[in-house]
Image: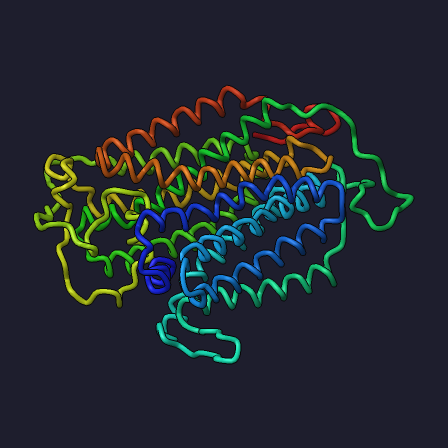
Length: 464
């Protein structure tokens, strides 16, 4: 939420286009780092890539807190800091591969759901902490000796650096290497520090590459869809309901927090539902629910949104580049005390002939997407880990994480261009079409999306 005002404060030459790069470079860094850390974790103790990646994140957060110090080119220092934070976040591949290797098939879904619930909790608490840090103000406190400014912009990253150091300590002192096969028997692996007489060799066999590619595509689409929904949330509500930027940030923040709470509940429920219906059926059901959510968002009726006839200003709805649309997500309510024009800007020609999306319609859609997305998210990489089997999964998990990072880059770019040029009717119709194609892909590969041990006849297939 604070990136855009902080960027403007440290470097007056930064524009909305550069903001787009600052936002995207996190995912670019993660996309590059995920396969590297994944490969590393296949051949060395996982403590190594985890410790190094977190150290990179801590360093990047400290750099972010000091981007105001250089005399020039401050925006590029921020760009580098964001990219390094993303690079450090590539350790998600190591974490998922660790969970996949440390759990049996029966434990896998529950463990993955718990991890996703923790991520969702962070998604909820992040904006809360940011709001609390806003009380510090822009000026904050300065530690002159080390040129450190502690204000509403730097406090979150300093907290992140502190938590990163704490994580490194916990990893080095508590984390132990552990790997089992699909039945729960301990397996021998390079990551083990000690050998045991009870260890068994990992079962051999070929991985179904068609299932691997299919799951990567499914994961890409799932994250692509949610990324574009997050991106368009604020511009859409400002266009349809004539909300001011301040109202949009407040109300949409509440909506996203509610979706985070909903996701935690869904993750907990999935642990029970997966035992009865299986991962594939829940994934299919989740995609259908997501399709229903975007279908409901299609404009209907003969009521039209309020038109913004005035010339566009900095505090009106962005309508050109990805960076300009993203601005509204980070705009601080204290930036501009003037009301400014509200409504659907006349520069977007579709505003004149596109019916309004009613608030109840929008909230219903958000609730459905909030059900479908977490279901699809956790089921896709849980299935993926089962398809890969008991062998080290670092590299494969790296590619999965990289596909998700690519989705988070392309989703906002896609929706910002289509929505601005053609409006919500075309934008959400295309999204519905993408989801239908994804459901078709899942249906075609349905029988191949089975666990490695099930495919090779070592374990009986679970219900689905």
